[in-house]
Image 1 (cartoon, protein in one colour):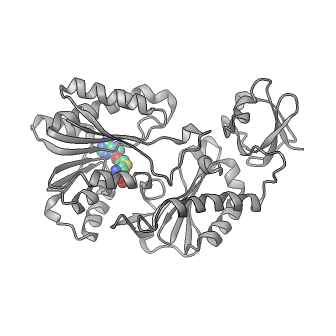
Image 2 (cartoon, protein in one colour):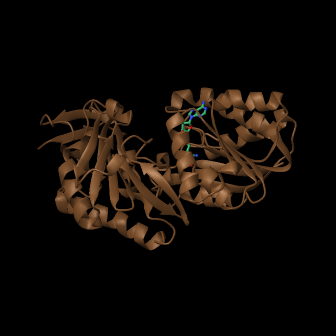
Image 3 (cartoon, helix red, strand yellow):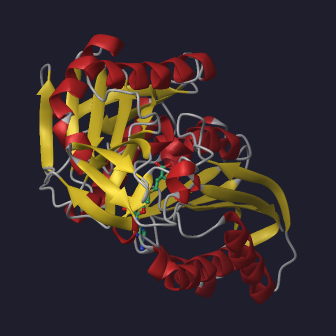
Length: 395
Ligand code: SAH
């Protein structure tokens, strides 16, 4: 039988149903499993602990499929896992809220390495582990059958594929290609174009949906600065909620162009929106030097700490932009600030933001703490799945 034996004393994390088996915990690999193949996982004394997908290239040497040694890992097993994920969304996320959401959130939905996002009738999947790569065709068939979607794209071009020894793969997997690679979605009554072929991740930052609604609701009558705007998610919500003016900044000209289109798509007044191609670190300094001020500033930067080793450097980046933002806020102004770096804990993030306010010479209060939405659940035994945190602060 193909199996991995754990080192004595290293069974604990599997017994706690933590899905990652690190290379350092493995005593022996038997039967020469291929990348992604299912292996039995056994404790040092031979006790069966469950089943995992083997990944010879990765530090995460195996990802647990199941902690039940009587399970069989096959198409029916995957069907049950996908059905559970789909049912949860049907029950927890009203159709009126959105037609774009994450259907499968990898480890946190018991399907390690698989992300599936729905954009109206289009699905986009990412296979991010050797184990998922093996089941790709089966998953594609199951997804089409179980969701009734018109097409399925693959965007397996995330960096983590390299750590698994996998090449990039993108393109249409089932159904026909979209004209221009774009699909229109509607969340909370606002419409967006999503570019599923060239956009970031699978095309849109679905994890911020409820936060866009929260922050948008604070925008009425305010002069807003939307930093790291991407395709205008927060900007469109702010304008739709009656913001006096919204300045959006991003380094990507393509993202800004789509942002402008998204504002137009919702019939929002062009003269109240400004789209600035700029590095936010420089732009905030420029506005500080010009003594320009705002009533609401949104900071939604990319992941500054892709790995745990870069947390300190990331902390300096967060401190810098938050400090500058606090300086640009008028009295009574609001900062909506986010971090999507998994290595930066909510506690650490709050400390960074509080240090930034102190150094900026402002007193501020936290009005609300924000998280990723429920279509990005966090399995209790997989705290690594909690990556997005935000604070709404008032000065
Ligand atoms: N708030 C957006 C998502 C932001 S993603 C939404 O709700 O949809 C982060 C964005 O930051 C990306 O669009 C990326 O192009 C941009 N970006 C990365 N580094 C930047 C920098 N230094 N200055 C400005 N924009 C940057």
